[in-house]
Length: 323
Image (cartoon, rainbow, N blue to C red; front, side):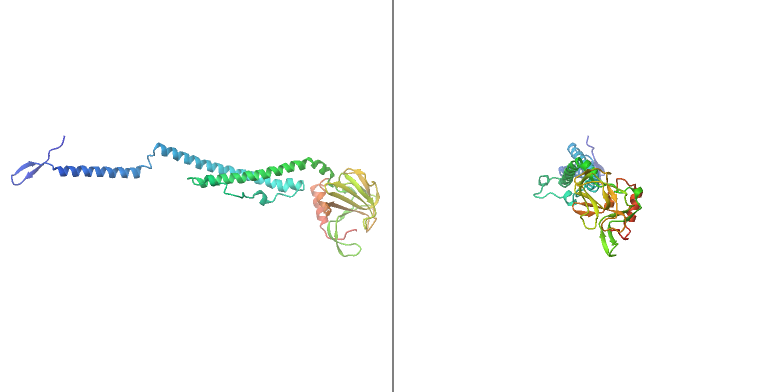
């Protein structure tokens, strides 16, 4: 019920009833509508983020889920990269080194993808960068895994022949350590005993009494047992296969003949002083694919770590060779 309002009329000294004008009523109604609209607008701007619609809530949850998945995928990729890096290092520094094959170059493992933009179909969306980054990382990881898989396939094939290689490789000291007087000279630059000039010494000299047994350092076939090579005197050469040849020089006599097959540890001859030699000793060489290499790297078959270390120190002393 509308309240009736009065005013005091000083002329008549009485209260008179106030009758509202139609224009005032319309103006009041209009102001009320304007105030309501302003209030609604302020409420929408201020309160809309607080009160989400069901669709907005669903979209926000999906976006949070996508971001969470991206973080999880990135963490998994980082973990997989660490595992793969460890396998790659083992592959290059242990497996491939063990089987004497070249390591896979880093640029080959991490080569990029050429050609057109592989991720064009993923562009133009709200989260394109995030999706492209994850996809690209997965592609790179997949390629590195493929390269590593092929490498391991190669290692498996090499392992099938490794048993024969391990038996054939010249892996023991050709004169027993209890029969040695000393290790007289190592591989490298040494003083020539006859000319006193500095000269490359291509093997190792083991001083021992004349007649001390000499043993084959690996399985193989005798390809020479003669004294027709200058300076070596009576000497034996064994072809071990896989590119390896071992040479035993200055013998007093042989215990094998050309064409004979021998096993590691077989007696092949005796220490002497034949050829270009200053005193009874065994001059021992290893040839790999035509190149003479340091024999000290192949004594893992019958020396303890301490004995090997002592031999290394003695071999590094630049003294005078015996041949």
